Length: 390
Ligand code: NI
Image 1 (cartoon, helix red, strand yellow):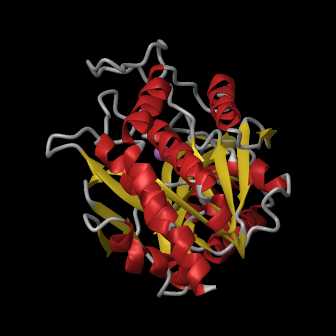
Image 2 (cartoon, protein in one colour):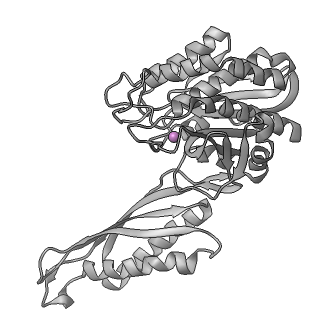
Image 3 (tube, helix red, strand yellow):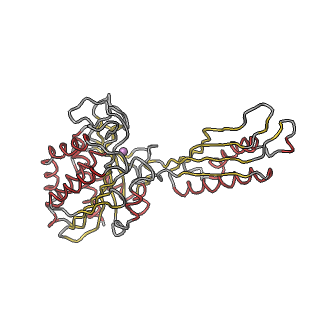
C-alpha cells in the first residue's frame, strides 16, 4: 500500500506542477488568502474529501481516517505569499502586481494536496488518521499556526510533521536537526524616562542618557552571566537615541534591539532579566521606564525521536534522497507553535535549481519542481514511520 501511494504521487507529478503553477500565478499575501483557501477547499471537494474551512482564519483542514487502527498524525503546509514584485520571466509568473510566491509555499500546498489525494485513494488499507493542515499566514507574525492550534482542532493529534522546500540545499536532499532547528527572533524597545535639565546642574536632573548607557553595558551580562553557557543566545542593542545638545541633559533615552534564542526557557529568562536590569538601572535615579518586548515566532525545536524518523527513513521515501543533520539556521518559522504542543519535526526538502539560484524572498526566487514529489513522499514516510514506531 505504501508503495502504491508513492507511485500515485509520482504519477500525479504533472497535476502537482499544474497546481503549483496555478497558485504561483495568483499569490495572496498573509491574512488575505481567501481565494487560495477557496481553491484548496474546492480541490478537496472535487476529490470528495471532506474538509473544514476558515479554521483559525483562512486555514483549511482535511481529515482522512484510515481503515486500520493507528495514530493521528498532522501534516502541515503553508500557503501565503509575499508582498514582492516577481521578476522571473516564466510562463507561470505572478499575475498579481506586488505579490509573489517567493518562498515556495505554492509548492508546499501542491505537494500536500497531491499527497492527500493519494492517501484518500488508499484509505481502506491506511493505518491511523491523517490530518492535512493547510495553514495561512506563515510569513507575517503573529502567523496562522497559533490561531489554528487555538481552535482546538489539533488537540487529539499525536504528532505533527512539516517541510519547507529549501533552495539553500540541493535537490535530492532532506535536512533537519534534532532539537534546535530554526531560531526565535524577538525585538525590544526600552525607554528611560528621566528628568532633563542644564548640563551644568546634573544634580537637579535624572539623567536618562547616563542610565541608558549603563544599561547597554549591563544587558551584555545576561548572556555572559545569566544564561547557561551551553545554551545559545544573543542580546544586541542596535539603536540608542538620547539627547540633542551639548549642554542639555536629556529627558529620555531609547534603546532598541534584538534577542535571538533557540530555547523558550532561555527566551523567558532573558525577558525577565532584561526587565530586572532596566528596573535596577532606573532605581538610584528614581527614573521611570517603558519596556516593550515583541516576541517573534518561538524557535523551531524538533523532537528528537521524530527528527530521527526523518533522518533515518528519508531514503526509503525515495532512493534518490540523502538525509543529513545540519546545524540550526537563523530563519524563523511558525511551525514552532505545533512543536510546542505536540511531538514532531520540521525538515527542509532540497530544491535548489542550480548554482546560480536566488534565495527565498527574492524577486527572482524559484525552485526545482522535481523536489515536489520528494516533499510529498518524505511527509508520507514520516507518517508511515511514526505509525510503525508508535
Ligand atoms: Ni517560507
